[in-house]
Image (cartoon, rainbow, N blue to C red; front, side, top):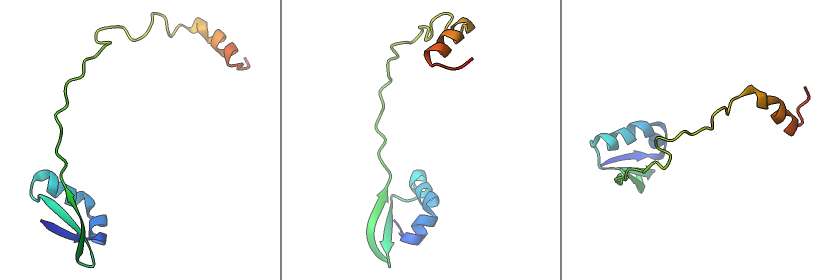
Length: 82
């Protein structure tokens, strides 16, 4: 267990979190004037199930979606001056 006062924790948060991630420490205690007020522990990572892709292997865009012939029509819809 490591104890850090608030200022130390603010300035060295990345280093403190690295201690947790690497397993060097199991918890970090944050103190105010050397009196413990909170603790930081590593979150347990839940196993994420593989997501099934509903669109896997399918085309995501219609043929000719980028055809320039639609530019004038779209400009008219948005009332863009030519």
